[in-house]
View 1 (tube, rainbow, N blue to C red):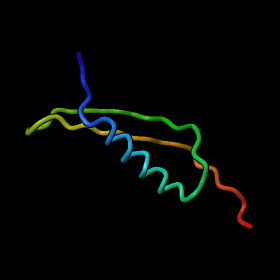
View 2 (cartoon, rainbow, N blue to C red; view 1 turned 30 degrees about the vertical axis):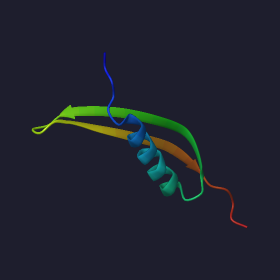
View 3 (cartoon, rainbow, N blue to C red; view 1 turned 180 degrees about the vertical axis):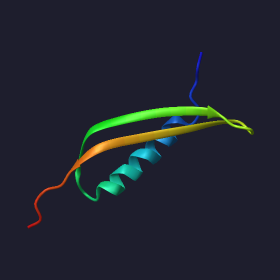
Length: 59
């Protein structure tokens, strides 16, 4: 059985970063990619979120 380590924290951090980058825009077409790799010291994990950002007209 595979138990992902710290997956919630990685998702929260990745989502927080993309919301900050959107600068108040509306996120759509959100994709999430989870990857991992073996390193010299241990296993590394990476969560990547991509999305389309739509911004309204400035008034």
